[in-house]
Amino acid sequence: MQMAIEEAESGIRQQHGGPFGTVIVKDGQVVGRGHNCVLRDNDATCHGEIAAIRDAGARLGTYDLTGCTLYTTGEPCHMCLCACMWANLDKVYYGCTIEDNGRIGFRDDKFDGIFGGRDKLGDFLEELDREACLALFDEYLGLQHKIY
Image 1 (spheres, rainbow, N blue to C red):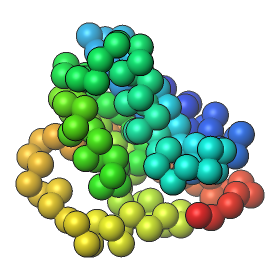
Image 2 (cartoon, one colour):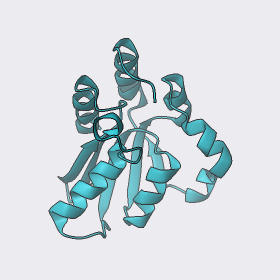
Image 3 (cartoon, rainbow, N blue to C red):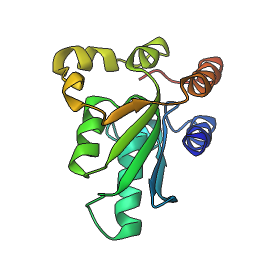
């Protein structure tokens, strides 16, 4: 998770987007990384998870990320959650919750209310290192940034 936090820090310091960093690991090695680049790329879909999935696919030469685990600083939105499932990731660890995402100005809770269903995922999603990720979110709140 520390590498995901560092990825997010890089993105927010460059004003690429929100404090969302992601790494994907397979067999103990990082095979993909990315951070939120919505503002940099003018692309509403360029969330950290999506960027990391694209990176891992390119590095591994496959769309099938079976055997991989994703670590991300914020609980995935539904778009990212579905992308994780389409990529066949084995597990997703997240730091901050959907509610934490809302505290810093993101509207994930709105979409979660519409789509719901996380209770059906079993142990696919698991919270990890929330306190460290909350410190990242606090840093983000202290920076001058664009709300989107």
